[in-house]
Image 1 (cartoon, chains in turn green, brown):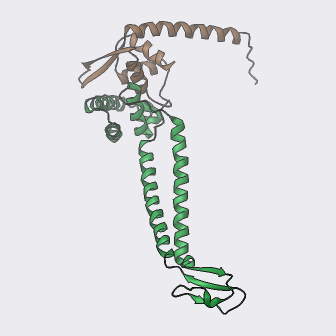
Image 2 (cartoon, rainbow over the protein chains, first blue to last red; image 1 turned 180 degrees about the horizontal axis):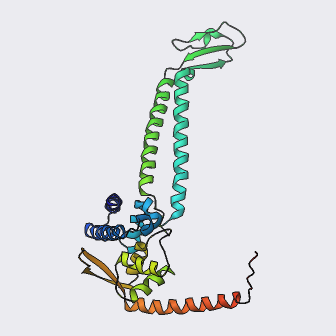
Image 3 (cartoon, chains in turn blue, green; image 1 turned 45 degrees about the vertical axis):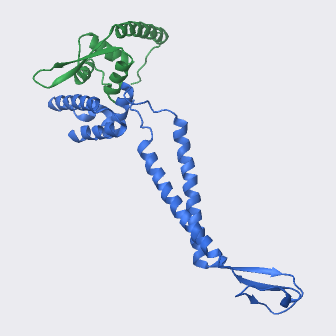
Length: 181
Length: 103
């Protein structure tokens, strides 16, 4: 059971429990577990289901003692994943769209329809292909400026996904533990 | 209710964590099905219902002993009184019930 006590120690350290108090609780717990073992009482019989969740056990003990703040704002705890899910989804969609645009090359060429009667009066940008004359004409514009936009989108999406991953990791570390009954 | 039971067993004499669970178990009460006594003891300590001190145990390391404070004794007396009233009320409701065991 020393592993259980060690995990409790780590959790107390992470939660900012002062070292002397953490040491006191760890010592008491280790001594009690040793007594229980000596009398043939299993850790599960002694600690109940807490034995499977040392982090929650340690946090509940410290918060009930008033050493750390009691987790509050459960609604915030529920809302945060929703916001995170929405943010992650948006970032993922942006990444997919940017990747598709880059793969297909669609936005690098845009089709511009004009209604000019005299095609030769319409100034054509360099590199544009002028369609045969008619009542209307179409000019294929090589919009070179579109390419950076796709790359910017892609980079933004990658950064956003990285940020989302960090938020998820942070939320996983700080979410309120479930207090044992 | 479990708080009350813990106060009751340490009112018999100061005890440390594991000792309390033994006293409860000896009376047929295994309270640790879903948790443990430590958070409960922590709450009692925070609320000033117990006093603690360290003393050597039988050959082992110094242990943290718990005993009820004066507030704890008041809380115990009130809790026992409320429990008995509730138990009597439930008994009054259940007393007329005839139990028939189908064979």
